[in-house]
Length: 175
Image (cartoon, rainbow, N blue to C red; front, side, top):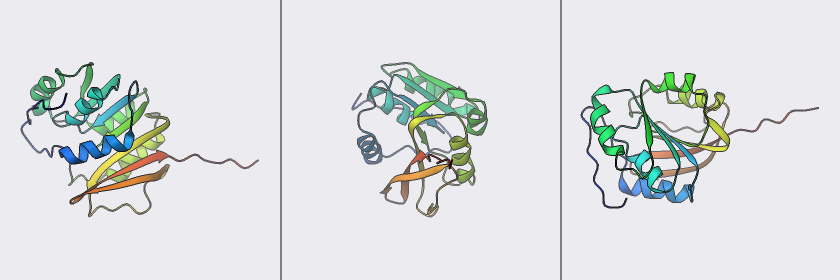
């Protein structure tokens, strides 16, 4: 879907930079046939990128109802259906029963609950076995230790923002 234009919805939004999107998906590699969840989707650009790279099941979650019309218009160009949910991300995480191979979480930079949200995702069934949580955050919100239940597997810097790649920690049980 290279070269297609998407509209930017009204309100607070920070569309993912082209360079960042390319790099993130290069790190992920082939996502054909995999499932992808885009939290705080905004314009839907990350969900569209996942769909265009072969992800078969894509969901996008956005709370701001003012973004609904443009988001639905943007995702209508996808080669597969992108399921859009208009609700708070925190509620979605609590209620979701399905799991995903990849979860991209791009909260507004002023969002204060990134650690708590990451821990909630790790404690839920959202991340499938071997799944990856990608958290986009400002450089100032450096996470040295991560969140409970998650292990950092990669970190990429893009100007003043960072994308961390987290995997659910495997817990060893002593016998």
